[in-house]
Image (cartoon, rainbow, N blue to C red; front, side, top):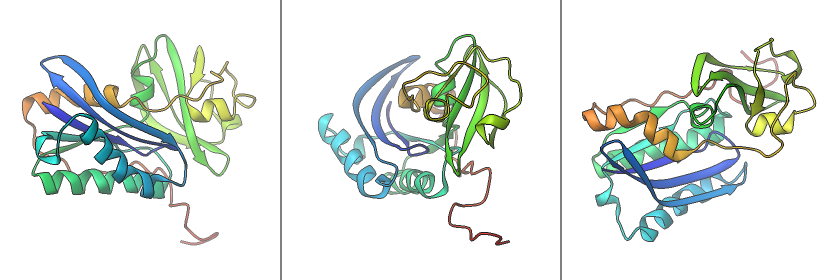
Length: 213
């Protein structure tokens, strides 16, 4: 099964083709660029480049997996709309996965995963040996509750390392597209119905006027 995976929940614009064979995953082609304002311009060409690198066309894709956030409104919407449109055009199912799980799912021990939410805030969740505890949340780094985490990881963690009450990785880490496909694998292999992608915004869009309701 050939899967197109997309994520635009962070400043990383990402696309990949991942082959799923039984319980094994193989990264066939991949594109990533760190550009918080380049999601609209870059995602489409990245998809085309991934298909070209693999010598495939849209007709060869069997399913689409998309990170559904949490993430800033504009960037996240680009990835999800693109994923839904591609799946609809190709006549294949689309599945959503929490983008934070694409980071936290690769962690060991107790980890705080934090991505940039803008407005000097982070989207965050705690993972125990790769399994998320509770729902993702948003807040100011210095105001996060005591989590008992051994370390913090993610773009938000590296940006606000001096404000977190836990040792943070200095290099930013972005959602792993292969991990997103792995997390969706049970649905993919079971032939589950296509999903209505529901974004995890956690708050009003950045474009909301100050004091607006």
